[in-house]
Length: 178
Length: 178
DNA sequence: GGGGCTTGGTTCAAGTTTGAAACAAACCTA
DNA sequence: TAGGTTTGTTTCAAACTTGAACCAAGCCCC
Image 1 (cartoon, each protein chain N blue to C red):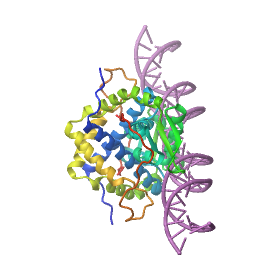
Image 2: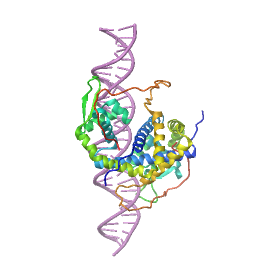
Image 3: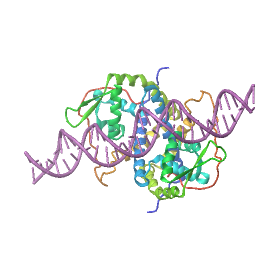
Image 4: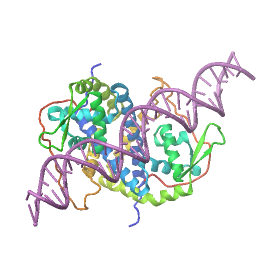
């Protein structure tokens, strides 16, 4: 089949998207690097942990919830562990597994830096959008994400339409990415 | 001033955005790495060059148009030069400057791999959106990007509202990022 | 016409990401 | 229950990114 090129509208949208996502990620990374001493991804890892029951999550679940690869997560958690923001424990239910746990120090860091982060997200993003646009953005992103979720490149064409996973190691807590 | 946290709608939008942008970038990077042997950014650099007059652009202009730092670009162009996709020349008008030029080989690579890339952008993004959503996405991203454009962190508070730059070294050509 | 500031680009070290391989524990299943 | 496969995680080397220097070349202006 001959390529269906992008329409002019699609091209404009695509370019705008690329520009916005680069600039936005840069701005947020810079702000967090300055005030929290870590890039956005690392902050998100802490934020995700803070919302999980017991402020802890198995590595694979954490990778899934932050949308990153397991090896990237391993590296990140290793560093966060050195920083004292996270601690690793063996998973009691599954000897293969390990669990990342947000330490009190990590929680404190999060609480201390959350206002600045939210501020940046606000001024760079939400303050620029109307409430309708916020809704539109959510819809658009949700659709895209759904289409790509658990999109293991090596899954057979009409394989596994269902999705797995759920945490074993328990608790109860709060405080978000932004 | 006490922090204005994100509303529930904003939180949902923000999370969806983070997820979508990670997943999308990953999918596109994987596809391009496979079929073009380079990550998305590098492909974009070639695409940007292909559309510039003379298929060439000064480093700073290229960095500006791809929304990346100069040092990142230097590294990328060095690699693309090794690959034979790009060539560097001294800028005749300004002895400090250097110009990146898309080689015929680079152009051929682009033409060969563009269909696959467009295909991915289509199936992961545009096929999932209604025409209205494409328009909304463009608007949203344009606003965000405008707000962040040339956002040198070290620019004085109410400094330089105007923007500079324009290419010196000339020509004429085509073929887009997607 | 020689300082002093700005601009265009590169370099370097430290940090991060990638993807493939390695491992070990868990899960079949005959 | 041994053997084979899958799953959870880490490891390793190679590639990439970051930010702070650095080095010229242009600019300004007295």
